[in-house]
Structure formats: C-alpha cells, structure tokens
View 1 (tube, one colour):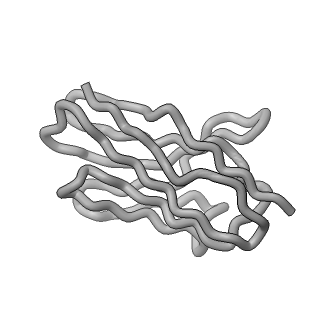
View 2 (view 1 turned 90 degrees about the vertical axis):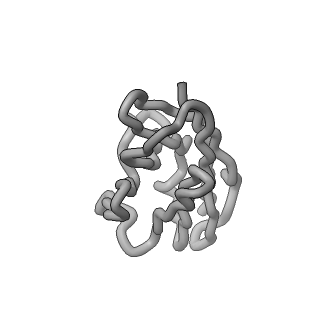
View 3 (view 1 turned 45 degrees about the vertical axis):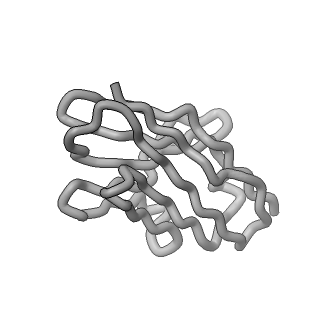
Length: 115
C-alpha cells in the first residue's frame, strides 16, 4: 500500500505564497502520476495540478500561471508552489499518488487565504 502525507498548509493573506509538499511511502515500485486536488467549502473535490512520470504537467485553468507542480522522484515527493493566492483558493488540498497497483490519497492539508 502507498501512503501519501501532505504538509505545508496554513493561513495567508491574498497575494501570498505557500508551498505544499507530499511524500509517498510504502510499496512503491513505479509512480505513474502524482497530483494535487482540492475541496473548498461546499464544493466538490477538483483537480488542481498533475505531473506524470515523464514530466508532463497539467493545470486547472483557475491556477495556471500562479501554481507550479514539481517533483523529486528520488524522494517520491511532489510539491505545489502556490503564488498569488486568492480567497477562492481556500480549500483542503489532497495529494494523490497513482502507481500500477494503487491509487492513494493523503489526509489533506488546509489552505486558508484571507482577503
């Protein structure tokens, strides 16, 4: 089983920055993709950004130009650099790790952006 653990959430003012980290541990042989999702108050969980094994990335339109996803494959770690944060970015951010055998989720980390 694979267990992702997120860190780096917190409270910032609008325009501020945060960097989220997610370390995946467990029975990891090959990671196909790592991603960040978020779920805001009263909203459905949505995909924020994803990075594939080959390095290709995907971003939701709402975060393009402000967020950057990156990874350290040797450490099974994925990062989400969030710049220019807006109140609408307030959510619980979840890490998702997809391997050949597992599709695993972390417990989430709260990000709150005040106006």
